[in-house]
Length: 160
Image 1 (cartoon, rainbow, N blue to C red):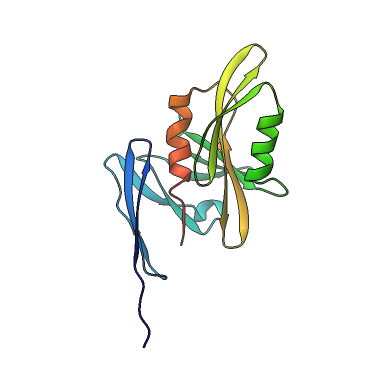
Image 2 (image 1 turned 90 degrees about the vertical axis):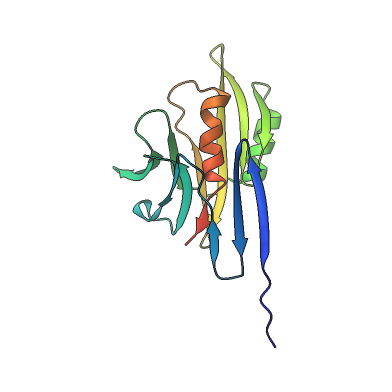
């Protein structure tokens, strides 16, 4: 006789709590107020994630983004030969970088560049056998308060 095993995982990411229940084939996640679940199929990734309301997955001239057009911009690309272990080693070996926090698929780190301190996040998530890199766009200096919601959103990614 087959028995279904149900696993309930309660995870807290910063101040955002979500509950994921999994029975091996179905996954459901409650969506906090002010957030919505979006599909990443518009950027050719068979997954969904929970983001602040108004954020969309966008393709622009061979570039993939998850963005609201202003203060929430996540760049997305194939990871190629990079992964979380290599990223952590690169941060540890660079005196201008400092690891601030580590999540299941992400790191938040501080970098000093041209005399300015800025904060970045970078995540590596495997979806459908393909490893993807999610990271802040890095066109303007960001703070921990700015990158944390982007990092938290990437941590909610689930395959479709």
